[in-house]
Length: 300
Image (cartoon, rainbow, N blue to C red; front, side, top):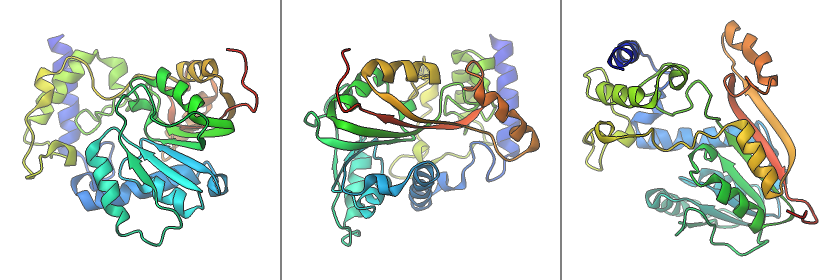
C-alpha cells in the first residue's frame, strides 16, 4: 500500500508543481469568487444550449434541481418559463442565489429558491412541474434512486428531465483533480491511496488552495483528508446503473448523448469507444440525457 501511495503522490505532486492554467484541475476561475460565479454561469449555459433548446422551457413550470448559485434558474426565467423553482441542499448557495436576484429585477418571472429538509424527497406536490433541470449535479446525489423516483412524482404527464453529468469512470470521476490530476487514478489506485495522496498534496508547498479550501477569512482550512475514510461527494454512478434506475422509476429515454474527448488527436480517436457499452464510461467527457414521463403511467 505504501509503495503505491508513494508512486501516486510523486506523480500527482509533479503535475501540481508544473501545472499551468487550463490544465486538468487548474481552472483559473476556482481561485476567485467573482470569476468562479461568472465561469459557472457560462459553463451551465453552455451545457444547456449545446444539447437542448430554450424553447423547451417556455411557458413551463421548471424545477432546477441542484440550482447552486442560481445561474441556470435565471436563464430559465429569461427563456420564458411560467415559474422557476431552484432546489439546493447548500444554504450558502441558496443565500448567494437569492442575493443575486436583487440585481435581476428585469426578469419576467422571479425564481424562488428552497433548501430541502430531506435529501431523499422533494418538497413539492405531485404533478406540479413540467420540466426538471439537473446539470452538473447527478453524480453528487447520494440518494439518487429515491430522487429519480421523486422526479417522476413531481412531474406532470409528458413532463421531461434534462440532464448533463459526468459518470464515475470518467478520467476524473472522483472530482479530486485539483489534488490528484492523474486520469483514471481511481481505476489504478484504491480509495485509501487516493485519500492519503490528497492529504499529502494538500499540505505540500506546491499546492494552491481553491475557493472551497478557504474559510470566510480567506485562510486555508484544516486538512480534511487526514481523517477521511471514503472519497467524498460523489455517488459512483455509472451509465448502466443510471439507465436501469430511471427506467425502473417509469421514465422513457428520449435522448442520450455520450460525448467523447476533444482536443488532441489521441483524444478524438477515443470517441469510437463511446459507442461501446462496456467502455463508454471510461472514454466520455460528459453525457446529456432527456427523459420523459409517459402521458399514461405504466404499471410498475
